[in-house]
Image (cartoon, rainbow, N blue to C red; front, side, top):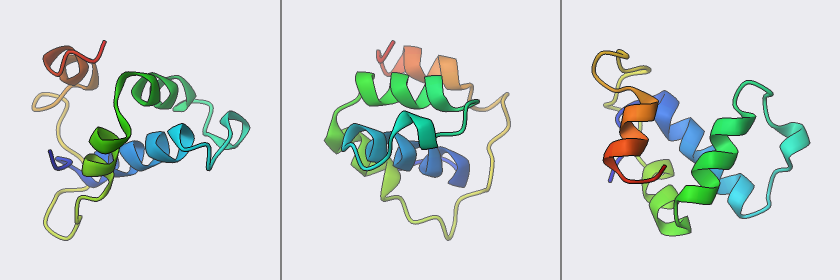
Length: 80
């Protein structure tokens, strides 16, 4: 499944790097640390890679919270 925004694509890239142990928790932004850990724990490498590899030429920087809420996304994908 492709990412819906550049922000989501970057977040999935961070989670992928964390899961692969390419980046430590100390190097993660403190505000994103819990979300990255949660994503890395709840998704497979393939799922994270699919989101992270999305070409971001034609997707918006951000998607309105009304359109996509992170917590709702996790619930819909049964990742919580």
